[in-house]
Image (spheres, rainbow, N blue to C red):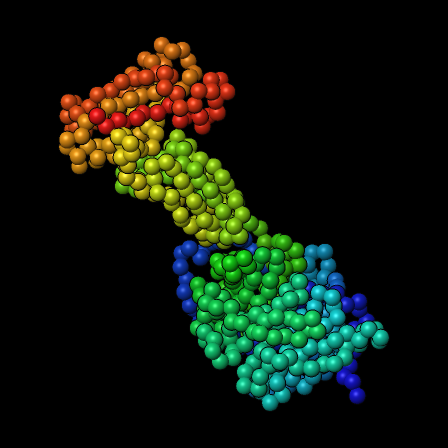
Length: 522
């Protein structure tokens, strides 16, 4: 005889489920609270969702335009069985209406035939809605759960057949809180199977074409800790989960990680506007800025309630200054490329005359910053928009100078910069000239000629005069730092020795290379 399950007469459509029943233990252990967790730039406003009772309600998933909730409150045709360990009614699965404000109402038994003798857990559906995964406590151990798979009967509308346990189940441990990815190729779930990091860990497994689950893999220490992790939920490029470990306010907190091509990265506690010293579980989004969680934060017992939330992202900015490592002198014209954790270029810019860059950043996002400048080692740094009370972050990007090189009878350094139409050595160019001093101090017999050149803009006479002044300015700086005058000579060449003889058609890059000072060994 084939096994069938009758669901409500609803057209099957859902977002995958992850919730788990049996939340009857209150967690109030305070773990780690640090100042950077106080605000995160994500502001959650939570309100009672409207269907909570004196017993327990834990959210599950969406089904068509309904929301599914696990509850041990007696309603309608739900079968009432009792957990002998806690002497409380077992959970049943209900569907509730959702209005335009996110309020929940009119709970109805999801399926009378799903009611078992033990706690029911959440359900998950394949993207084609032909496979359902349901969770149920074991009859011989109500603290352990098993995930079942059922297949939609295409001949009899509303029936499910071939209910069977998944191969990832085991009599010795619990397997629960399943979630199916949007493409239907992966299942996330939690388990206390041996070989993990401690307690319950979150795993990912392959979903085969026939709906079977194979090759479970532990998600590793970015997600899992020595304590419990449950309730994985993925939306877009992020995965959310609940954890008793990591950077925690207490109990189960909601965390977010980024799903990148290089794996799961950037674990973040999403902050104290949602998380509390008690438990927050079963996070799910109904839109990019709205969703639901379940929490026992307002209960004197261990009972959970369902809360709706609305999310606003607080505008945040990064203000960074590029400086030389030792002197802290600001470095203008440094090329700065900022990428987010997904490898997308967020900003491609150059530092201004004060060495500064500014850009808007997203809360809880990790950025890589690559900074390049002639005469300096490439700087690779990371920045994480954790939190800030005034929503503005300040960072310093410190760059190390490279050494001067001797090539073809010349001391080669980066270009020496002057303000437009001026011959005063700028602070950043003093750093460059210090490289010349270092070479001359290590080679006391060396003599050099300081040759200054301009671009072709302006008259010949003007450019000759300007180049003489700039050569003299570099000469004077070296003298001021103790280099004997007899080891130095200087001369301006104006535009007589252009590297790029392109006239008015020169690009800015070509003009900048025409404007140069050369240090020729005599």
